[in-house]
Length: 100
Image 1 (cartoon, rainbow, N blue to C red):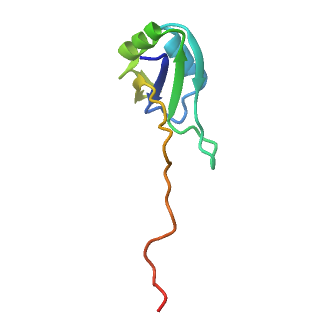
Image 2: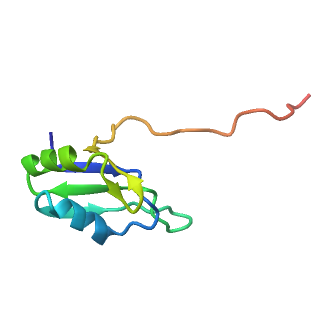
Image 3: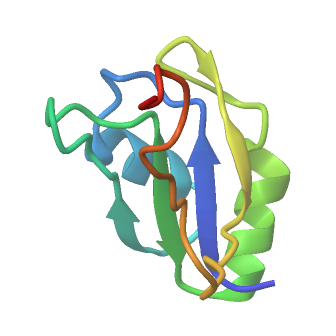
């Protein structure tokens, strides 16, 4: 297990500071990253926390998965690296009337 954690099910009102304070109880917090929505600028409801060591990360998962912060039950697990394969793709196909 690495020392980078995924923290899900966050309230939109949760701050970096409150996440850092919660995780600091289990060890050194090196970074808290909270992605925001491009359109609205609001937090997206999850964060990534980088702990000082793998042991501290394991301790944080054991103690904080299911813990409550700002009225929400947190999901804490090891962060998974994104696959380097293709992305969400998509296209413009679909219904509508075709040309005759």
